Length: 215
Image (cartoon, rainbow, N blue to C red; front, side):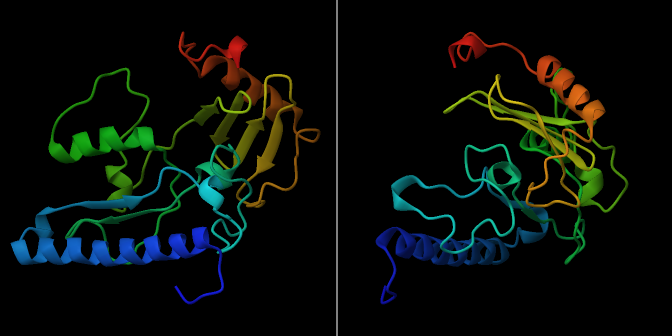
């Protein structure tokens, strides 16, 4: 409170402190109840930092080297970490670079619970990754967003394709080498542009609530 910061940044810091404290209270409660070894904790976020309410994504360097913020389909808007505590299953201190998305969570939870999912679900269980085993990779992961423009993004292997509106060109980034998505390789990789264009057309299902032509 005594920092010479704008109120939104003070609020941000206070909320992080509260989150840390409450998470500690939660894990202590699990221990006190004797159920910690039979409880899985998933800790993650749904998007990158934002500017609402006077927030400044750059103030705490919230995104590090990543480009973009919430509502962008560059990795700064959609790439988030996940921490999992699963005693006796997830090796403490282990790290995975497996690329997954939130639509993988339901199949993962279903497998852990010993039940099945409908066949039309896009996601896949990431239990093998949690257990340190080999995992089948997605052919691609697709996103779209409708605010300010009709944006599309696709991640496939080490590559990423982004289009910031239907009339904008497709951008190609080698994200494993270019974490900040600074070097657009579309001109050098016309084959990847065509591949991404195909996914942008085939991966989505048109919705009466969010028709493309009205965006």
